[in-house]
Length: 349
Image (cartoon, rainbow, N blue to C red; front, side, top):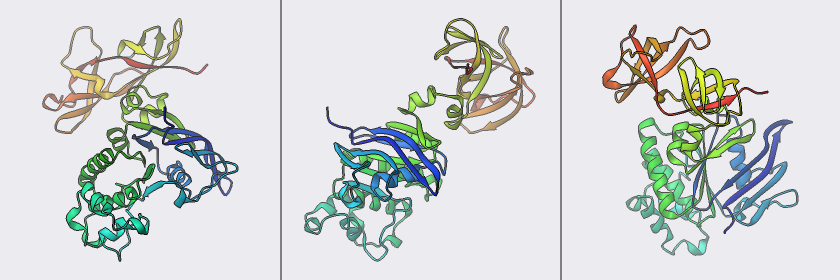
């Protein structure tokens, strides 16, 4: 089995005595797209700069493939690491045309080899080789920056919030284009972002940063469905947390007895369960089903959310989903039907 494209162990970095990375571990598999997700200021860009060699770590090890590029005895210069870098706004050279920008990433001896044309075709810009950056859209500039990073066939490509400067409509399109290019090129990529939707829709693996370390790394479905704690559940989207008594395989909550997954232990114990709003469906009043009253709604077209009062001191309000064509009115009484299982979080002992 080949070594991972990137392996990081116990990585630490502080600035002016303030810890930024506090013992971070991460592996990126060959040919994969991994997203590091976290709020602004959590250390994501610092992590990329350490991998690229733009900063030196205080402690820990970074391997690119089987090669150690950073540890207590080793520091390999950025240009010798075999790592490509795509900055937030592309950072193209304004005085160079598209072809020259892409060629800048190549050794001088390779610039006439046809590699530039090959890359421009790969990113869908073959007819724009002579244009300058100011003549391109934001999405085109990002594709040029990606082509430049891919030019020397790096072992790993790093992308630092590359879609942040694009408007919402263009961002979705360019994300899909960049993912397709990375797939077609066979490149391994590490993307950092603060955008949950971006990470979950793009990546094979999402690694979530908190307090300078990775709290969970998993495929997007597992991460969204089974976050390791309630804080992470809320960070990854809307989460409904219900206090309850946990038993083996079920929990008694304000929404009744719910089937659960997760480590409940043996015997009854206090804790909480997590549901996503899309698991809680609004229905016309049903006998025996928990009920609530609609306080407010938000309509999205294909579906909607409803804020519902349960008249339960332990859980006064929750958010549920409703079909866009069956949106309840404010003030309506509705029954709440839970689909699937709830994730159990036992209270700390």
